[in-house]
Image (cartoon, rainbow, N blue to C red):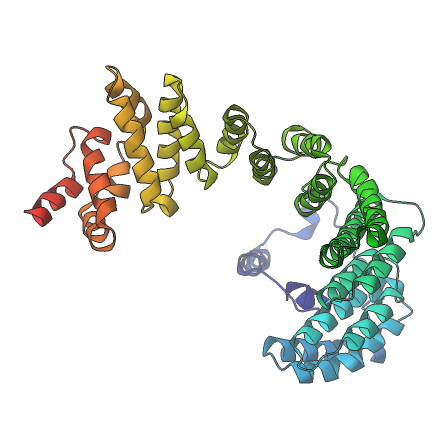
Length: 430
């Protein structure tokens, strides 16, 4: 509601500023220095013309106050009644003052409709169409939002019509922000082509009429893929669009192109770091029976970005199954990184995997050095995170198997420390 406060002209003065101004005014009042002795000339007072509020603007302001008050108290029908009158602000001929009010009408009207019972699609269409024709500044985003609403109501054809109109719309010199919005709209038009492709695909599988519908299905694939190829050349986070594109490529057997797209999305340095990109690549490789070596390479990058990701347990198991000794120590580090996070504290699978890793390390002479290297920075806080008497009681009550696994590891992970977990274990089992 801060924007509303600004439009309503509500003063926002920090206490510090008001206090300092009062203090400075008192100091000026007590000053005994004659004005003539001032070395700097006084600035000439400027004549500031007071803003005279017209009756039209006053009516709109009061109406907006009522709308705001009704929305704050969730009186949606009352807010709708006042909003019906407030929309007259769109007729304001002063473009500078009218522009922010246009966005307010758009945002507030849709919010009121979302919360009103028995609202129809026609009500939304009226608002969106009126706002699209009230000015060009928000035209593209209003079209996109209108398309979202139509999609939610299952009218895919009308939704595509909206984004198609927005895609072909131009106004004046194309700015950077306008170009970015057009790219976003193009991406969502491709998403709608994908939805239509999915509908054709489901019809095809039910009717088994391959020849009759396959041509129309391929048409939607061509429309979607052509646009997505261009969109994905622009750095950004394009997760839902990547998944749609890869699914279509896999359906037509173009796995090489699908893997190329996913590799580009995951490893191109011009794109922002995105854990999902590595997850999608891993899932694709897993579906196509890729060797473990390549899977571990992908998960290695994911571990750098999100050490607490659920796939790190899979990564640890793959490392443990490897014949290289260095991979066992790496698995130890990955599992300890997971257990640094509270969300994995009581996960039995993680602790059992850690137990298996340490069991392998114990077969080597240098096992103590390997464990100490990983625990060097954890010794001060790990006991409090995992091995207190509270944890012992809770683990024993909720999962006795977890209690046993942790109890077998406490002296190895935290040697030479008086562990409350061990003491509690001895007391509870005696």
